Image 1 (cartoon, helix red, strand yellow):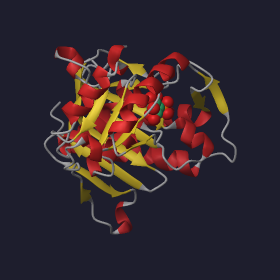
Image 2 (cartoon, rainbow, N blue to C red; image 1 turned 90 degrees about the vertical axis):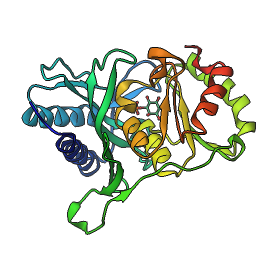
Image 3 (tube, protein in one colour; image 1 turned 135 degrees about the vertical axis):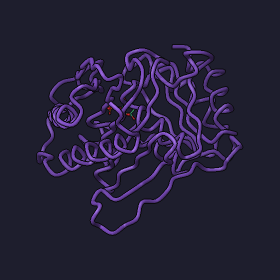
Image 4 (tube, rainbow, N blue to C red; image 1 turned 180 degrees about the vertical axis):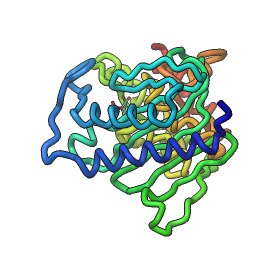
Length: 284
Ligand code: IPD
């Protein structure tokens, strides 16, 4: 079919916004932990599952031939060549504790969403239910932040990355995996990185970290261990805001993913990558 990037972007915004409203407005008084995954820290709530079901339904209604890959298990092989990569709640621990930094991430990608380096995003939206904002981008169409409610009268704002190019003046966002051994290594890396940068933020949602790079409210972001659903929409939003997103190395490994994800302005990103590769966090 000849769907346009503009149409896909519009759908990303609609689906992410609906799911964002759902997790905010239907939030039970006490959010129960439905299960833990890789470790005690890696929680999934009933609302993660229900939000993914909602996204699944919306996508299949509008785009029945597309594939779907979701954090909570959705894995549909489509026939159109397009795959929806969704994180129904990114920042689940914040959601559980009512820390207002969680998001719904919805992206459309081309290629094999299961293979590292084998796909690229073409449209994406990250909806922030706490701020009632939705950040979005389409390839070649810029990166934008708009109100959750289009009738609010607020115009969308175009995003662009900060011009910072020196590590010593860099506000760096990062995040941690759930596996205790991975965390121990991440802590060691921070021992070496912290003295070299202006400061570090651990916001708790990879999708929002990437949006922050795109809007320039942090200068850079680096994390190991990310999955496609954490970064698919944010990756495109950073690119369309004039930034770059890198992986650990050359070839396939130059794409962001498990080994490393670095996002920043073009001058800063290679330096941040060098720092994380040199200090060993990208080793696996
Ligand atoms: C997590 C968040 C967190 C990051 C983790 C992710 P989830 O996603 O994005 O900030 O540090 O690596 O797994 O589990 O809340 O969807």
